[in-house]
Length: 436
Ligand code: CMC
Image: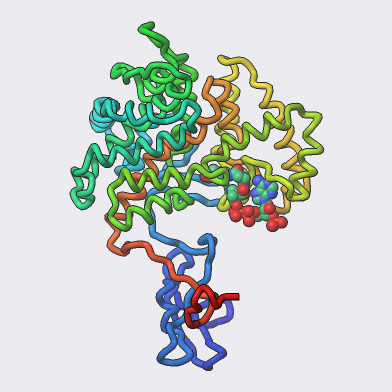
């Protein structure tokens, strides 16, 4: 019995006041109704039936998922049930990748096999370097890597066999392995430096740093602190459930496109400044502010909506983004090695003001993952153009976990939203000479 003495039923009663008809639809776990249950609500038999209008999917679940859990109100993030802070502290990016892709943490031998598999697939076909040579010297790294990923589908045409689980896994390993190589090649092209081939003896992040920064034949040994910091940043960026780029991955994948093509699309969705391009936008914003003395004028502009405080706000988090607090701690460790980044002072002061001023407080605007990551990347020597790529490398795992889940989910079909047509009614064609 409920509080009012009425029988508790997991259903929702709907009364259509246009017709006086009553409907009862099931409430599923998680406070959800099936949108298709609304279709029965009609004014008459020729009526299409009721739909929900939800631009930007603010209140629509597009899938059931077991990959990542977020409670935006409480600032909770878990991968496959494991809290993000435990993973960031005790795991490695490749172990977390295995977890996201398989659903369980690996045993030691499973992890060793996976690391070995990824390590053996880090090389890209030499023709990719020719593709990169075609880009201008100042081409943005994200455009180059998106093209590189898309081009990989032509090197592995068997990737179209998306229903073959072994074939799918092979492409997953290739993508996880080759993303750092593509990113490093884009950077070296930009700098006019020769490409550095992957080094199988190095860890995932150390190899990436070596491909970026090694000069000549000298042995390259990254600082273990920076190698680990990069691994932590990768863990934090590995997945974030149904965001813009994961949705793009699922939508493109739902047409049964190969994973390289789908991932290139997901990367393009990530590129925008409201999503993974925010880390680059934050750094440009901090450079523009230049000094803490200029912050009050900048914040006035934000409150007047003349600009956005990049790296703040989130569609889902209405509390502090748990990734941002871990990144802040990582920043301290990195700066002990690289020296202090003066942009941090500006960032901390922006955060102080934002956490106390009404405009930000009433809109629940807290720092998100991108607010501090760019400052760390800059201190580690990465150019701003590489920042969105630094997001895309670890997120590749999340996209692939979401893609696999979508393909294995019998409820999923080709994605095809409805629209509410608000254009002209039918009208006759007017010859060009008679148009006013
Ligand atoms: N600076 C100033 N005002 C903001 C900001 C901001 N960064 N973010 C949101 N607002 C205001 C917005 O103007 C609106 O105000 P009002 O209610 O008066 O119209 C209100 O807050 C709600 O904002 P919204 O744009 O409706 O929120 P959204 O859920 O559609 O957008 C967001 C989320 C992340 C796109 C947005 O907060 C934003 O543009 N932030 C800056 C870009 C950024 O840092 N993006 C990275 C997100 S985290 C990494 C990732 O996973 O992508």
